[in-house]
Image (cartoon, rainbow over all chains, first blue to last red; front, side, top):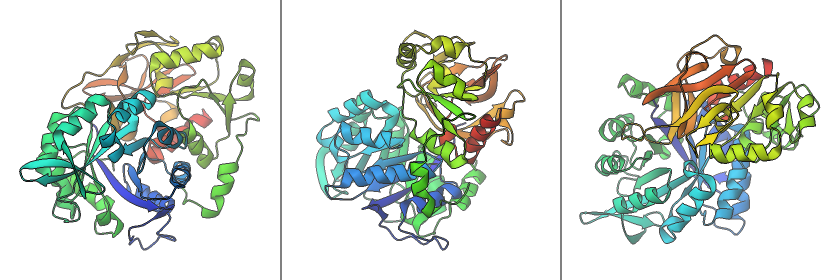
Length: 251
Length: 218
């Protein structure tokens, strides 16, 4: 039976992690490689790096980051942030990335999904979707949830799947940062509608939220950042609780 | 697993592949990225080099056939290297990883392709269903069907990392590790000196590294 995956997400800028980290035994909490190694040792199943570097040097710093991670880490990882063209993706694949995550660039140019899937295979292409509810509709947003688009969330996800997305990373901007739990209603609708893996993101505050999201929506993976970075949830404890709730995990 | 040594990163990056004998020869044929595999071998201190032509085979004690992507396309690339007769005649331990494993079989439904036919089993496509999404992506348990040094110090039921849409059928004679995803399939196959693993040992945490180390000693 396939294990449900637990995925810490690290924000990186200019090669350094930007969100606060509360691990006592880290020599350098800003070093993404050391942090990644620590998570992998705790039992994380996969890692996501979101590069928010905004300089012209971005591709170079991302490639350096990916190489450094691939040299030291023995679990799969995804890199996202500012990937706009095939050449970006190609450089990251050669550097050792297992998957890339595309958000705004795919909404602006959906054909990019077809091109990436044809060039690298669907397993390499994660489509990240930031969603926020407007009235009774779920609407795709860009720029970290600040910019609404014309696209409805489920419709966009189905299009992305048909174009060659290998996985969906769905972040509810309504839940993100609230620590009140994942958006199980929307996640269930999406997970039931697609035939590719879905990663739940946004709203994790305590261990029970992970139990809930797997039991109520059957998504394949759950991602969180601050609850892991600040040590509020320790991955070994989380996995033991999931296992105690008869949810298949890798321990 | 050792703690990442900050001072050592540079030397790891610049360490040249040994290529001087005794290690693993990675068969290069243009199918997929091998950075993560060579990085794992470097972390584990396992010497390796690359095989581009027939003369290179004598330099190594064992071989890895890597591979991702389309099995039929990978087979065509392998044929184009001219190395197929030499690979089929290998007597030293040889490990196919992912599509590299599928190449060892006789046939794949992917592109209706005839493959190396070193191990007489078939590569088939997973049936798509709501419960079993395709590609089969993530950590799944594997169970040994036979005693073999490749799986030494790895408990039965350990998780390994898989990403694939096609699987090798279960076969009592050749399945070394079995796994289940909608149907039972071969997570690993074995015949004489030929081994294949469907999962990615270089991405499968400590047990994946144990498996690579075991292979380096077979």
